[in-house]
Image (cartoon, rainbow over all chains, first blue to last red; front, side):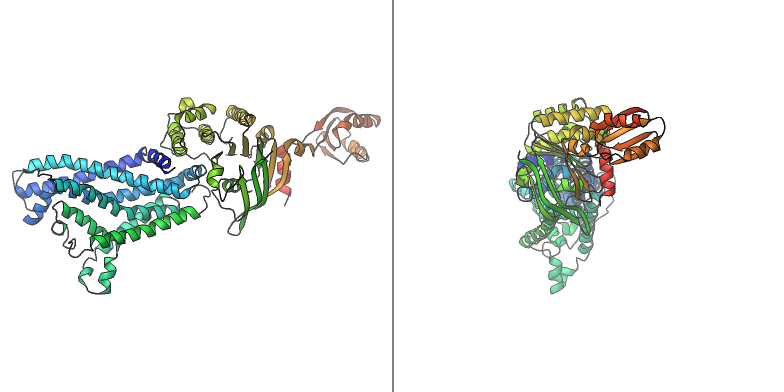
Amino acid sequence: MLIKLLKAEWIKLVHRPMTKTLLLIFLLMTALILSLYFVVVGLALGSFGFQVALFNPVQIEQYRLQLSFPGMFGAILGQVNGIGGICAIIITAGAIGSEYNWGTLRAQLARQPNRAMYLTAKLIAIMLLLLIAILLAQALGLVLAFVFGGLLGSVGSVNAGDLINLPIAILRSLYVLLPYVLFTAACSIFGRSVLAGTAGGMIFLTTDLVLGGLSFLPNTDGLLAFVYSLLVQQNINSLVVRNAYSFGLDPSIALSRFLDLAILPSQLQAVIVIAVYCLSFGATAYYWFLKRDLTGAA
Amino acid sequence: MPNVIETHKLSKRFGQRIAVDSLDLQVAAGEIYGFLGPNGAGKTTTIAMLLALVKPTSGQAFVLGYDIQKNASEALQGVGAMVEAPAFYPYLSGWDNLRVFASAAGLPNSAIERALSMVDLSTRAKDKFRTYSQGMKQRLGIAAALLHDPKLIILDEPTNGLDPAGTVELRELIRSLAADGRTVFISSHLLHEVEHICSRVAILKSGKIVREGAVAELLKRDQGLLLDLASEHERAAQLLRQLAWVADVRVVGKQLEVEAPSERAAELNMFLAQQGIAVSGIRARESSLEELFLELTQTTS
């Protein structure tokens, strides 16, 4: 039953113009950001015939590593957890909220009343789509590493350890997208619309970023630091930064000194805390979806 | 005949408003059943409860023998439904929209072809749903309901947006579905259509059934005679009121509406002729379902 529903969800998702547009935007934005890194590194190294150092040499080296192997893998996954998060919110809100807006949810559930199965199939389809987006972004990264790395004089190399790390890192990236997907799903179901889902997801993302700005708190002692370490953003950062480290990058140099594994929660804590957030968001989404009447289209 | 739909004291309350009030409904297998009522009477809420989309506040509903609250999956396997407006994915073609439903039910492409040809939509199957006319959308909705060859078909306002030819085609389609042994449950406000195709109807008002029965029986109750007179309408009315078997007489323009058994038309004609009143025409008056509907929904509290 789940496989049949998944097939139906997949047809809806992949044929949707919004899905293709968001995927294209994600890939273009990723390419654009890496192109900017290339310009910054190229200017610093004098690759364009003149030298302009916009950052210190240690930072420039970090940017250069992101334009060659294996750093490119980490750079791409870094974008997945940035721009990809926004795309995941929009895709989820669209996939769930539109069913209310168009009235198609009633038509679907009048044939298949197992609502838990229906929602599960929908969420799996969304996560599968996000996985495919990550794989396509990695394919784009391959091309960019050859082009930019080649132009800067070093494409780098990939060893067996990198190839083992890659699927693990991709799973980490997907895992940190899950709270956004589930929170957006809950908002779409509660508000019975795309707008409610998008707004909820974006507010969650923004709140996350604002709280991330309080990153001096881990340096304080006691309860405040403990509470801060339980915020979803800190734990997401822990896994995202681990992805970067596994491909030789150090975001504490390139981005922020607070993105340091020494001050971020451990991997075990991050996995558990994110799981708790996912369970609470998911349970809320399922509760509303299962319990509420499906009255007329919104 | 076993009942395909059966409800016992089925009720739904939204806050303070009672949408459906202790509804007892029985629809037998093979029937074409009309479910009538003005807007807000509770028709769609009842259908939504029969399809497990809305949970009843109290009471029970059985569909194809299954308690819809406990065994919705088993019950709905044999049900094809179109609730309110036909709802589909605008960016998908008619074919792909049906493929979504077919995939979820594990049906082959041949089921899609069959359903599309039944509603005469095969030639536009590859066009996007958003480009369809209202009538085509309606037909796609019916195709989706027929996709898995259901035993019970529930159609909510199926003739909405259909042109006269499409309405006639749908009427024939519904008849052929019933002839194949399927049960069709139609909610509609097009009373003329319902009168022509339904074997039984229920008229709903404020969540309650105010009249239920075979269409022919319901219409027979309001039989009478219509008399065309050139003159002396008031005198004729006074004379007729004196007859024991005439219940009432009304003067409507140049006609008299006489509430009397239609088989006494000749007797009535002779009586007026003896009184020197010429009758230029006389015929049986049968009230239409529309008249009955308006009478019941406007006056019954």
